[in-house]
Amino acid sequence: MRAPSDPDLELRGKLIRGLGSLREMLPGSFVERKRACGRPNCHCADGKNLHSQFQISVLLDGKPKALNIPAEWAVKVREKIEMRRRFDSAAATICRLNLKRFLKEKETR
Image 1 (cartoon, rainbow, N blue to C red):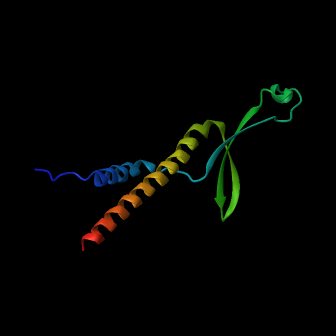
Image 2 (image 1 turned 180 degrees about the vertical axis):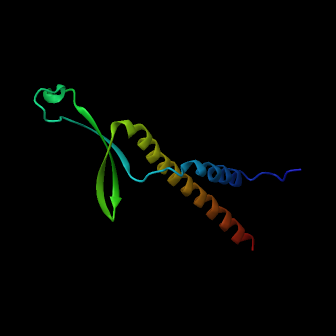
């Protein structure tokens, strides 16, 4: 027979098990910019149908850096950056649950 479940432990376990899929995460922010290429005969010359440029904004050696991303990588890179956001959120929740359990255990001693 299984012991009565603790919702905090169940949530913590679920979050930890879900972290395995995050091994490909990337830091930073995903940026999509619209810009004109500068060629006078291009469709973007009118300033309306601009080209998309994809970048990730990261800190390298403590300094902000924008790294250009090829358009064909944009979807995958955006997903990998979103993985980092999920990781940060899961880590914060796990730490909060652990602190709650620690304080509860400390009170009973």
